[in-house]
Length: 268
Image (cartoon, rainbow, N blue to C red; front, side, top):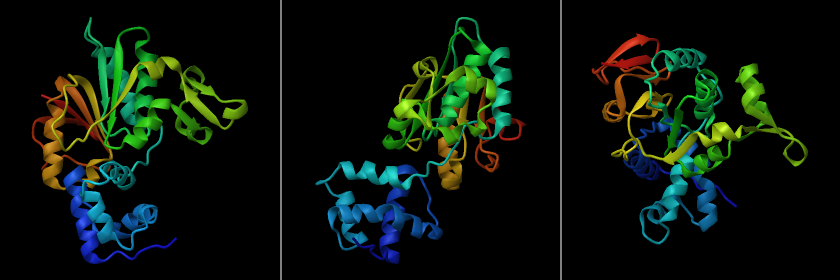
C-alpha cells in the first residue's frame, strides 16, 4: 500500500467539496489531515492520486462514498460532561422552567459519539425523574451515530462522569464486555439519534427548551455560522437557551439572543 502526495489543486477540490457538503471551512493546515484520513480510500479503490478519488467521489458509480468521506473528514472528538458549568446550568433550568404537561426537550446538535447527549440525559433523569423529558441528538456522520445509539463506551471514558451518575446510570461490563460500560436502558430509551446536516434546511423536529451547539462553529466561516445559528434559534421556544463552546463566540454572528452567562444565550 502507498500514500499518494496531494497537490494544491487536489486539496482545493476536496476542501471546496467538504465546504459545500457540510459547511466546514478547512484551512491549508488541514492538508495533512485530509491525506491521513483519505489514504485508506485511495488504497481501497487502488487509485493513483486524489484527482481520481475526487472523480469517484463526485461521480455516480459509488454514491455511498460521499457519506464515507464525510464520516472520515468530520472531527468527532468529545467526552462526557465537557464544560461542566453548562450541565450545572442545565440542572437548574430543567427544574425551574419545566412547563406542566410538556416534556423538557434538549437537542445535542453536534452529538458525535453521544457523550454529550448521554451527559444531558443523566442530568435530566436525575433532576426530573419520572416527569416528561427527552433528548434529541444529531450529527452529520452516520458512522458516529450508529456507535452513539449503542450507548457502549470504553471504561476509560468514565473519568469525567460524576460518581453518583456513574452509580445510577452506567453499567460496568463483565466477561466479554470487561473494560467497557453501557448507559442504562432508561437513558438509551429516552435519547434519540438522527442524521442532520446543520447547513441544510432542518426536518420537522419541534421546539426545544435547550440546544447545545458546542465546538462545531469553529469549523464554519462567518456566513455559515450565521445561517446555522439562525436555523437553530427557530427551533428554540421563547425563553429557551442556546449553549455554545467556551472557545466560540456569537459576536457578529446573530443578534436575536441575550448573553446571560459564558457561552450561554437566551432567546428573547
